[in-house]
Amino acid sequence: GAPDEAQLALFASLRARSLEIEREVAERWREAAPVSSVPVALNDWIRRVALDWPLAACGTARGGLVLADLSSGDMLACAQDAHPSVVDTPEVRSAMRELHGEYDGNGVLSVALCGSRVASAGREGGVRLWRLDGDELVPTAELNVGALASSLLLPAGEEGPLWASFLDGSLCRWSSLGGEEPSLVVSCSAAALAAACCAPLELVAAATSAGEVELFSTRDGSPRGCWAPPEVGSARSVAFVRGEEEGWSVVVGGADGSIHRRWLREAQAAGGEAAGGAASVAAGFDEAREEEQFFPSHGGAVVGLAAAAAGLLVSGARDGTLRVWDLRRGAEERCLYGLGGYKVWLGSVCSDGARLVSDGCDNTLVLHDFSADARPDDDEIRRVGGREE
Image (tube, rainbow, N blue to C red; front, side):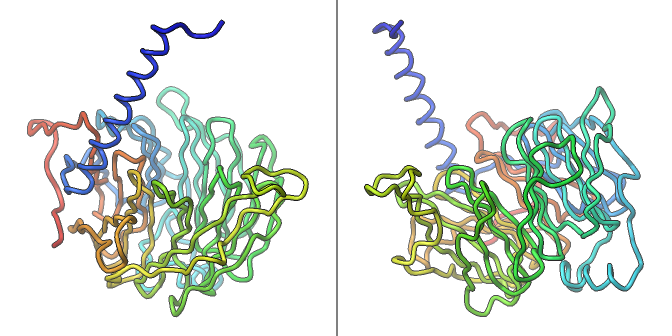
């Protein structure tokens, strides 16, 4: 039956507390007040990382794959020979120059994580799927598409699809991970260097070596628009970000260190209401709103972007810094602060809204915890990095 007054009061109280916690977390982000630690230190350099709190999947320079619990610092499982460290052929060397430029640290190209599911891609081509079983990472499938995968996405739960972008310009979705053939393949105009999904808008974006962001429908792969930010060189990273009131936008990081944003429109039914009926207007770029550039630019290629707490974005670049941006502010005031101590090998930036995880510190994984219950413990963790003024 319908909830009674006591239940409604309880729901309202829980909702109010949830909003209060969200505000506390956002304030800690804006005040640069995380508890920073190194929960993972391996005997190999960490090249890529994926986060599904409290778990993190790490791809290493020697081609290993490690699954760790960041809340405890425990190593849960390891596949030491998941992928080759180096594939020394002319084709792969050329592809690595396109993907990494002068800073190719060998090893795993991309990882994705959702619950006990892990996906990884290496220099041999294709994608490998794994599942945590006890203290082992057990291989469950090999997706032998041949091309080199630049990014992997597991955006929607334990049984959700896998998306992968490839350096041959293809963008693939596997709806059933029991089969090797993708259920959807779309072609970009150039090598796809990064990808991002937006489930609410049913969009997937690819950042290409031609310096463009191409949008496609996640339903049928139909194109939803193409955007070429000015003078970025290649588009190295891409992310969907939702503002507190302004709606959705897509952000791209360039090889030149610049960051640009383009607003999106949601799908509109014929009557004008957001829906998706027969005569609907598909989601895509909002032609009525101007694109924006963030200042100052990074001093190296922007290789990682991650939406953080509401209205906040984190960028990571080959200049060895992470930056936190407040998207509610004007273009000249958006950069709140930077987090230093990283190296040119930085390649991954991950956030669940309350925490920030990245590689780029040799064999360690750095965690910045902005959650409301984060507390420093000097006996178990050590503070790392620092604020870049």
